[in-house]
Amino acid sequence: MSVPLSELQKKPLKYRPKNQKEDTPSIYYGVLGTVSISGQKIEGTVSARVLLFYSTNKAKLDADKRAKLLSRYLAVLESIQKRINVRKYKSVDYTREQINKAGSNYTSVRHSVRHLVDIQLTGDDGLLVLSFMVNAEPMEHSKERDGRYLLVTNRPLSEEEMLSHFKGQDKIEKHIGTFKGPIRIRPIRPIFLHKQERIESLVFISGNASYVFHTGDGGKACQHCYDRREYTETLSDLNSGLYHL
Image (tube, rainbow, N blue to C red; front, side, top):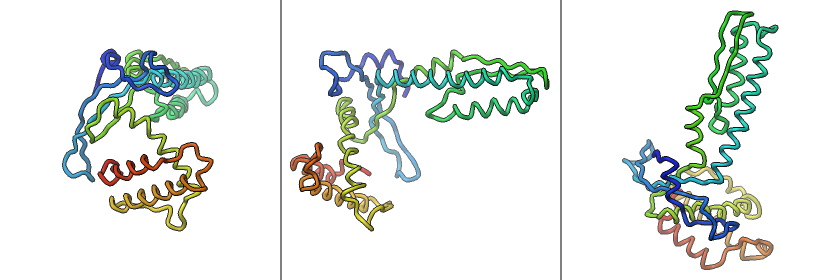
């Protein structure tokens, strides 16, 4: 699903973080689409709604991170360049090995900048020439992906609803510490489950334990406690199949 940045910026979303004023420009943009999902554990093909999501804040973070990693990578190459034709660096094989070794630190998904640099090592042993430069074309492609990621759902949600649910996931994540701490059940946990009904049973038991904890003495100091209506709605959603684990 390829959408130019200019098209994404024509689709601002209304969602605002708590620290952003309503009358300020949106920092979130999104375009809805569809995708077909298939796999070994999926019967047939599943159709899902996709929100191609763009965040101006994330775009800045991505650009800053790329610039920082690229600067480090170029500094390493410059260090190798200064050692060319000195001692071990007289050897073509050794020099190429060091170049590849330096590049291996910048090829992962989170640190991928090696493909942005063109490197040439020419000459024979003792007469080597190392040159490198940033390739403008892959750099532009990399910039085009800044700030983007996909939100996928099999429910008929709008762009705003998808983003709101995504941003609200921290309410669930904040209670992970509780599951791992005060209400950790021994020797029942940890459990490695595969069947859907057993996963749902564990979620139900853990949810009840969390509710009791946060409405009892153990939750007096908690600032993120459940209220009865919210908890009832959560269980209702679970029973209706809203959460597919």
